[in-house]
Amino acid sequence: LPGLRIEKAFNEYSSRAIILSYAEDLAGEEPSLTWDRKRFYADKKAFQRVLEKILLRWVNGGDGRPGIPTWKEFRERVANGLKRVIAENGRGRTILLFTSGGPISAALQTALGLSDEETLRTAWQIVNGSVTKFLYNGEHISLASFNETAHFALRRDPALITYR
Image (tube, one colour):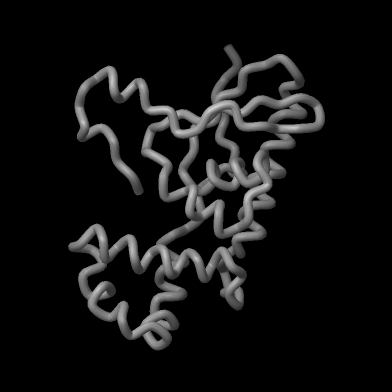
């Protein structure tokens, strides 16, 4: 088997940097989220509401922030990484990539032509440790399966299913 390697193209975006960069703007524009911001680390639903608003702003272009790649830059990094890995391995090969929900959703966007917002909303469904399969040829990548969790179901332990 070939050796393992780290491919930076599939690194997750820095949600912490994005949250810190956009949170104050959001507070001024959406006072209804003040309570959620106070409960951000203690309440899963508050966390989800705030995170979703912030990431939607980031994905929809926002105004760009110093030191934080835009969604477009992130998405292009993942797409270029996919192209490179496919080109290096050629047709008829099985390639395993271990990554996170952001790069998986960006790969879905590449394969399915989803909008930026649809891509983010799909990312919310990704289970930690799930399996997503793509098929590729020399020119095209397509989705074969998404978010498979049968390996968790076999263990019969609902605690294995987690998000974020």
